[in-house]
Length: 217
Image (cartoon, rainbow, N blue to C red; front, side, top):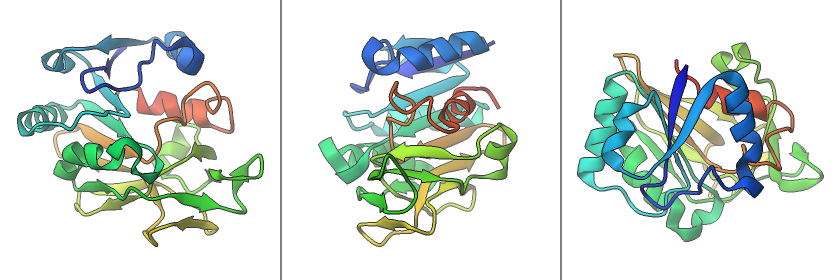
């Protein structure tokens, strides 16, 4: 059984919001994944997976140190942003993610060809890592996504935009990236935080993608 800490320590979106996240709550329960909202930072270490979904309060150095230690101990940690640096979300996520050689660019990524419902902000892509493919992820929709820059040898892209995708800031079209720690843990950064909300999770392979992110290993 996997235990997931859904952080509310930095004013994140809460998973208990029924209107937005009731489906992911149901799907994790069906998979035997226990997800709990956690409001005390020091308690995050009691879980296998830690999620920061749209954190609005910047992370302090000692908090980043704490998360880095969790990753070194084999934990999976994920942080998920949004497009346009709204609420300075890219800047806030960078206070954590830069420790792992991953930066959010605070831009807008559109795709006039590969999208859902003829909406160029609801971009779709099949350019996913082999590990994701093994876990049943072939195509995902990533609404209102930021792009990501990778600067660490241990960090690698796991989701790219298709050839038609365009970054407003002319950045490389990396949409999700994963840092692999030599001791087995990982840190995952995603350009959007709404790929697993009730609107998106049943589209394409978003359910499988979401469950991969919330599973151990």
